[in-house]
Image 1: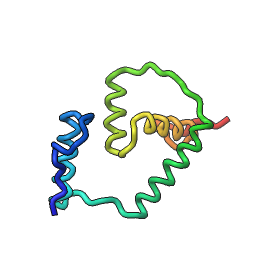
Image 2: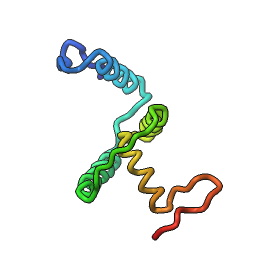
Image 3: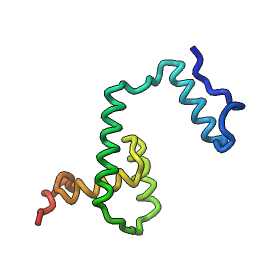
Image 4: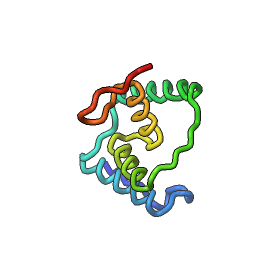
Length: 112
């Protein structure tokens, strides 16, 4: 079974990089290197995003100035975890604020 996308049928709004990504993903699926998520995993992911949307109403927007190098590293870490980078950064800050994430060799952040 060939899942390879026919480029001529792809929407015009996809650029060459996006079309290449689709082709490589389909090739990996065809080769058995990737497989679709289980129904349970999809349901868990959907529940996670529904909670995230509900929680977003309780959030405040902030503006941070970070070094470009740090942002690139955070984006790479987020990609490895399969998360949008802003969600990943918010998660790391949340864990730090709750004392669940600490600097190596140091104790947890005091909760007030």
